[in-house]
Length: 189
Image 1: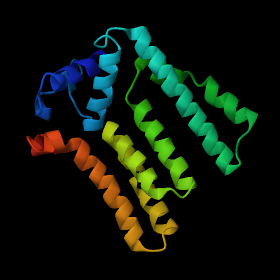
Image 2: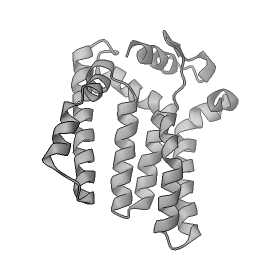
Image 3: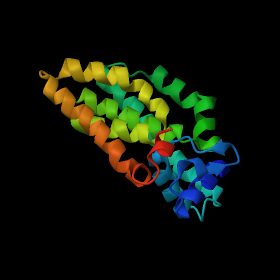
């Protein structure tokens, strides 16, 4: 959390060169969506010092993620009491959300919400959510082959798939614009 707040502090003080955004753990390696979300979190938690407030926010994220996961189970017909119990008992998940407050939690929530949209045939909105997840942490880009297959199989034309992929790219361009317009290579690297 402390390193995240240090990285955000550079951004909030006006720095747009990604190579100069750093924390105790090293240089900032997350895309622009991370900066915006964690800047907001810093703002609502007394400049990042109110750890209890941050933990409460992450409890909310945890509950939203849990509810979204269970929603996916319901959509698939795979909801059981055992699956619900296993989800709730995971010490690792509790650690990631409540103790560590990692940005993975935000990225994965966007990814799960995108999957719900894809299940409901809302591909364009799903692509917005998916791209928001990528904007928080690039490991969400690992979903890309699956997203592409879903889009190709679900849409009767390649045109609609192209539109959906364009939406993903547009979200990245809009969120990255302050950095792409000033220090593009530094941001992309």
